[in-house]
Length: 190
Picture 1 (cartoon, rainbow, N blue to C red):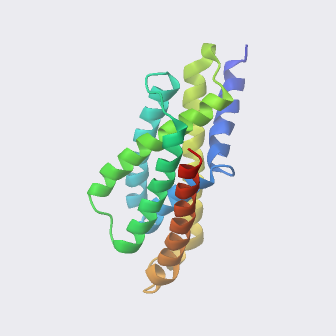
Picture 2 (picture 1 turned 180 degrees about the vertical axis):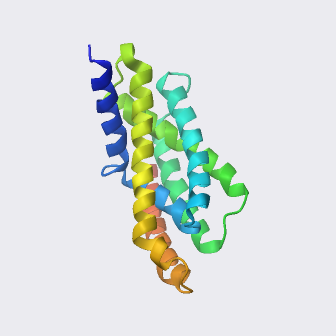
C-alpha cells in the first residue's frame, strides 16, 4: 500500500505530465482558449469554467458513474480544439455563449482524462487522493502553459495593432489544421 504522500506526489506528477509534455491535444486546447482574448482575467474565467466541467466529469467517469467510450471521446476532443481555433479566427472577443461551450468541452475532456487515468490505474484505497492530485496536476500544467503564453507572447505584443493578424490568426490556423487532422485520424480509427 502506497503512503498518502507518495500517492499525492505520484498522481500530481502524472496529471502535470498529462499536459506537459505529453498532452499535446490538451496544450493546443488551452492555447486556443488563450488566443481569443489573452487578457489574464478573461482567460482565467474561461479556464475556470473548463476546469470545473472537466473536474466533474473526470470524477464521475473515474468513479464509474459515467462510462466514456474513447472511440467517441477522442474525436470529440479533437473537434473541440478545431472549434475553438476557428472561433479565434472568426470572433474578435469572447462571447457569453463561449462559457457554455467551454463547459461542454470540459465535460468531454474530463472523460478523456478519465480514460487516461483508467489506463494508469487508481489504487482503490486512495481513490480520492489519487483523483484529486491527478486533477490538481492537470491544473498546474494548464497554469504553466497559460503563464508561459502570457509572458512570452501577449504581455509584449497583444496591444500591437498587428497582433491578431500576425500572431492569433496564424497560430489558430495551425492549431486548427492539427485538430482537423486528429479529428479525421481518430474517426478513422473507430
